[in-house]
Amino acid sequence: MCQLTEEKAGEKPGGQPEEQAKDKIGSLGQECCVCLNENPMCGFIPCGHCCACEECGKDIMKESRQCPICRQQCTGILKLFFS
Image (cartoon, rainbow, N blue to C red; front, side, top):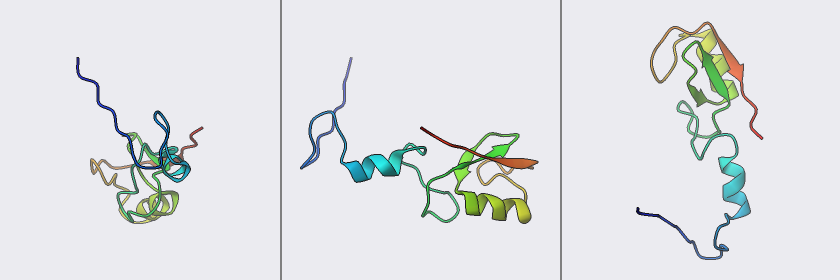
């Protein structure tokens, strides 16, 4: 079995710098697939893809109403909260 570990300068083993940890909350380190600036916080209904920030999700629903990932017609968005 292979186990990968990653240590960075200034980081305690097993931990993450505080700034990186904040960026990863709720998005697993991903960014909005539309603006590439914010964390994805909207799930598209019915496909369930969580790939857009709230602002871009609302814009998509006003314009194309298609999921940016699978292009399925969306009936709504669900704002997601991660803890």
